[in-house]
Image 1 (cartoon, one colour):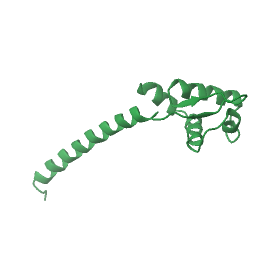
Image 2 (tube, helix red, strand yellow; image 1 turned 180 degrees about the horizontal axis):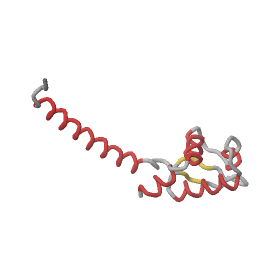
Image 3 (cartoon, one colour; image 1 turned 90 degrees about the vertical axis):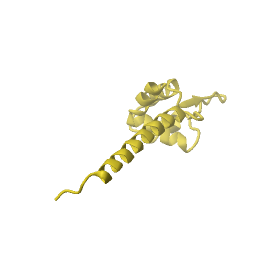
Length: 105
């Protein structure tokens, strides 16, 4: 589950799209307006984000607004939390070793 998420987040345009959607729901045209890429390219990036489970689309008449999926980053947050915990444990262990080491001349 993390690989599609990390792959989707690896592109700066997709991160910019997510940043825009963090402000609220938007259509493809609204998302594409400030970006230096074409509307078809934005549509492709949205498809990647949707396949990774990061965004949702809905139909509203002629409009197809996108929004960030609830808890989309939960698996990534859990993974990062586990890594952070392991690193903190390692640093605490290193601190203990260094505290016991005799001081050099």
